[in-house]
Image (cartoon, rainbow, N blue to C red; front, side):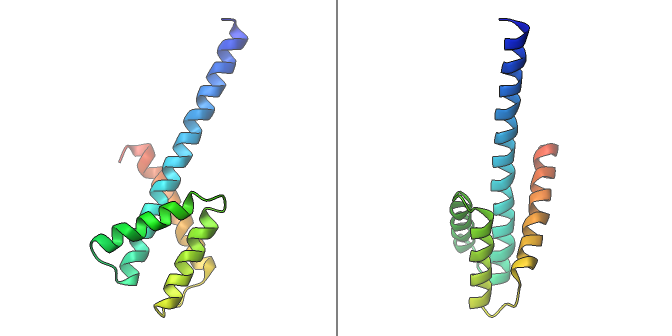
Length: 107
């Protein structure tokens, strides 16, 4: 292998690693956000896990975060909880930062 090939392989490996970290952080964020929302919606036990799974599946769609925020907004509205999409997006961003921190520290 030449030096160029080695560098190319290193860049490909870094890209794959970074992509995996982004995926893991997004999945963890959705889990944290779902648990937070489930608590506010009054869900308990297995219903919390099912709700988190529902949000994780929604997050895998091309629109991802927008679908999650839209789902949360609709669910909160159905329960009479007044919250804006902007509030939910801020919470999403907060949990994404927390997810990254957890992954970086090995939690």
